Image (tube, rainbow, N blue to C red; front, side, top):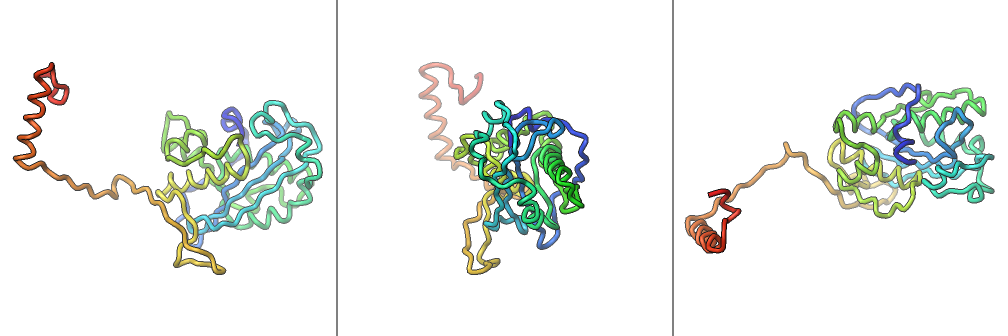
Length: 260
């Protein structure tokens, strides 16, 4: 993911949206890209793709990550955001060399993307450049835009990935610069927190696959799920509390009693 201006950019790409999935065995891919600049129409290219897999709202540990040679310079502003230089990408594959493995990983999933029009627009531009027979991302997967979702849930507030990490207490301290894979991981945790409260999930013991391991599940309960227990002070405790406030009031007004 790039800077805030990148994430707020507007395109004419239509993203089909729907609520978070309810179906059993739903496979989702949280996806992010880094690019040489802000506009595919100006010839900018994808230079990094990062994907994290979710199955039934659990992180499976499967991911897809590639750096790509764009065969062009990287804008100075973009390089400041993601820290990737053209020299870093020498020897990396071109998009057309990895497209089959990428689309196979994305196939029949729901893509979870923050400001989906940006990333989808760049990926479709890459597919069009190589004259792919199915150049639309929606030919391969559904798309859910978490920026649109966040704006519905938090109207009038900042809804960048950074802001959402703070709002949902997702630890982003390991990220010094933007990167496709780490941003996809952060978005996965934010998305789970936004849509149901599961903030850090791997496969549990009941869904152990290929000798995998169970992992700690952190659940952030919704307010409606909380059963609050109210413990009332005893008469002795209340009297002791009042005596303490009387003593405090000898030195001046007692804020704990309001304006008496």
